[in-house]
Amino acid sequence: MELSLYLAQLFGLTMIILVTIVAFRPVLIERVMSELRTSSFAMLVAGFVGVMGGLAVVLSHNVWEFNWRGLVTLFGWAALIKGITYVAFPDHIIKLGERFMRGSQRNIPLLIMFLLACYLTYSGFNLS
Image (cartoon, rainbow, N blue to C red):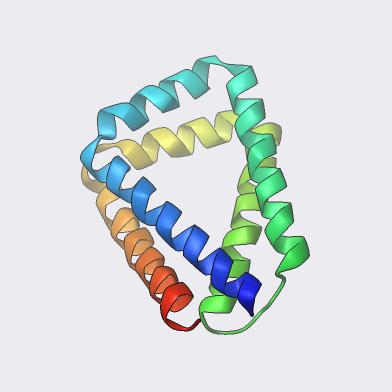
């Protein structure tokens, strides 16, 4: 259970920080996307970091429950799949990222991510 709490705190706080940055500094994220688009090395590193982080969660916390612990596992699997996609299909990731960053289309996914992050953070800190 301690690992679940730690991962909920880690994922929740990290997502709150990242969603806030994306919401208030979209130009910074657009520059990062531009850099990934032109640098195969950056895309490869981002992919391997995602694979390593995702595998770390999947191997240590493969808990499938319909609650916050299952959400932690789901985020681990999502990180693993995203990392593999960065390495295997970088053009697909670039197109998805560009589509996501266009105008107000990013607001609903950002809100959903923020709410899930708050739920994980609350669960991680208040259930310990």
